[in-house]
Length: 205
Length: 177
Image (cartoon, rainbow over all chains, first blue to last red; front, side):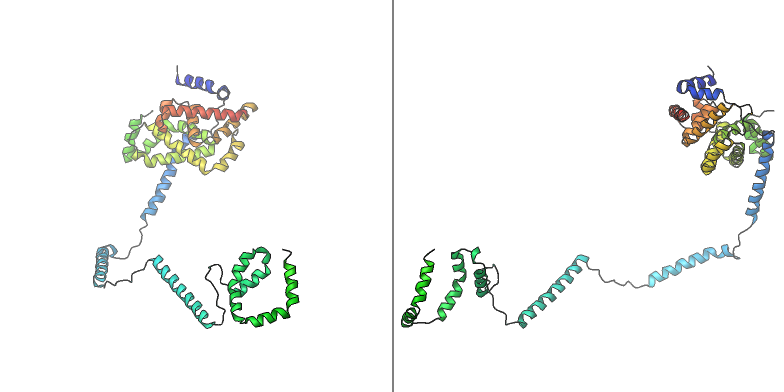
């Protein structure tokens, strides 16, 4: 089986349509004498191209006179010059660069100490402020402030809590009232009506 | 008188017979090379440009031809590469040319239907990737055996068969769409 038959059979198997197109294909038209003139045309073009290249090659690039004669010496003297500069030069130790994190830490520490100093000075300059009882560690409030707050919000607390909270304040007040028994009796007698009325009102609870 | 490849190559080695060698080489291969590149571009002017570029390259590079492959394989490879380069350079213009000039150089006796089909086929070939296009043209138009195609494209026969099959199927799909 010839190569052409193989190719046509293969095409028939893959695509009968393409085989049909191939069988009906007409020959391509080419200008007359094209192939007869092709060699002459090409050789003419090659010659003109090589002439152009030859003319470009003939033009010499201008180079200063004796450039290449002295080129080696110029380079060697430049190298020697650089070597002597290196030999003469002192070795200067550059300051050590501290680690960035360490530098940052130093700056933060400095800033913190300045802020601390400012707060301390302010505290010293304002001695008139009431001393707070901070023993409980809950809040730095005076006993009066606690008493006023609890008075206003009495419904939120149990009686025992209120008594414990105000106990120190009451103790202070009690110590300030110095009365003997005679004075007490006289006070009771004078205010007997009021006390009885108060007792009566509290009996309800 | 026809010269063999060996004789032509020997003539090229001598500067005094280089021009003669070139004429003999063209005499042997110009038509085959022309029809090959013509399948890529569909009009004579472009085919002529490609063939001229190919021949100038051959003239400049013939001294480097080592004879690893046959002379025709070498020439054919240069022509195919030149055609692909030309198409990629003139891609947009070439698409218009297919429509305008596909029928220009065909026989006047072409039927309208055959002409339309040929034009569609050229369109379809133009859509193929470069490698598939080369394979299709070598097999479909140049009717080349796979072994020769493998030598030219430096690809295995199996890969070429697969590539040709894909190309034909793709073209058929476009034609029947």
